[in-house]
Amino acid sequence: MMKLFFTALMFYTRLPVPKGIDHSADALNRATVFFPLIGWIVGAVGVGVYWLGTVLFPPTYLPILFSMIATIWITGAFHEDGFADVCDGFGGGWTKAQILTIMKDSRLGTYGTIGLVLLLAVKFFALQSLLSVEAFGWGVALKYVSAHSVSRFVAATVIPALPYAREDDEAAKAKPVAEGISAGQVVIAGVFGIGPLIVLWALTGLWIYLTFLIPLLLLRWRLIAFFRRWIGGYTGDCLGATQQLAEVIMYLSYVSLLWISI
Image (cartoon, rainbow, N blue to C red; front, side):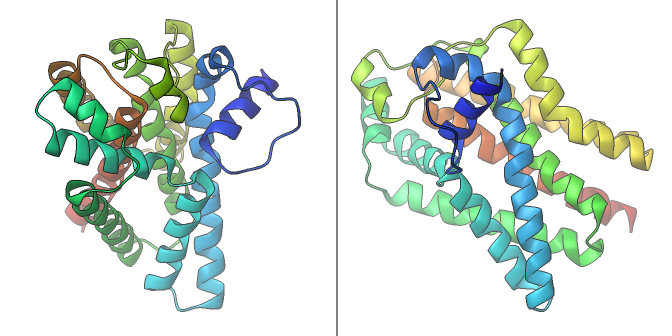
């Protein structure tokens, strides 16, 4: 299990791992269970960088920006790249072949550029709105970490719901992606994914945090239907886009709850 964890860490982050870690397709499939746990690490890094930013700079925009940069760097913009490719592919393609070809292209197009800029802008202003109302502390830290872990769990649940869309093995080698996950793995991934949200509920006594899963379920349902209709399945880019959208929804849910509570 430790080797599988390091396999997940190797694929989904830039962090160093011990030598000899298996990077086969089978290992990646089995390591998917740790995908939400990687969100704990990425979220913790973002929280740490934000805290350090508030020590060195005024607690306004710069710490938030540095925190976002840190989370993007530690993942190698893996999921952001997937979101941009999905914007390009589904924005510019009209057939399955066209969409998959465009998403495979390493160049960034108009749809991807616009989508990525707007996505990052929503993230930035959502975090800024959250921190302008709630003082930085364990509550904000848990919210930040939960956004990363829950969003990765949502992305992982797309895997058993759809077949892998690409038929050529060479295309998959450019962006390795898990192509299978059992019901038991989904349950374990769910523990890692929803765990921080459960802790936040337990510490605050606010069960309303669990209702944030409702818009995430709606997002998952809509994306699965969308991907099935246009390409008959999913790709690694689709999982990245799902993670990014789910993360944004988590931030917006927290901000909306604070605004309603004022």
